[in-house]
Image (tube, rainbow, N blue to C red; front, side, top):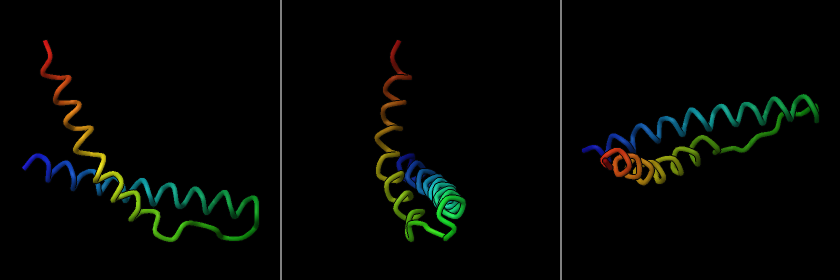
Length: 68
């Protein structure tokens, strides 16, 4: 159950991070190149990557928090 929650939260954070990075790329491209540029599916890619990496990071934090 914890893994499912970690995957869902990581995917949501990945979507938000992907939107932010995509908007930053668009703003920088508009400022320097005077045209709108961007990566089409960046939020989806970030969501998948974050959902894959999230459980391993969570396990690492659980392992280090149980040490005495």
